[in-house]
Image (cartoon, one colour):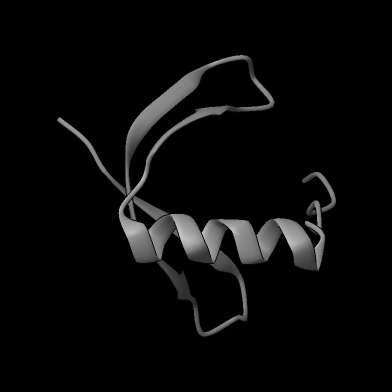
Length: 57
């Protein structure tokens, strides 16, 4: 299992703003796949991991 990547506080703030305004995002993952969708929120799991929620087709 790979070590999780911690994002900077500034990037986290940009993600929160994208969710606030419902911006369309295009994410490039480490495996070179891309995801596109409307940013709708960030959720925290019981084990304190955070996830970006995207609304897509």
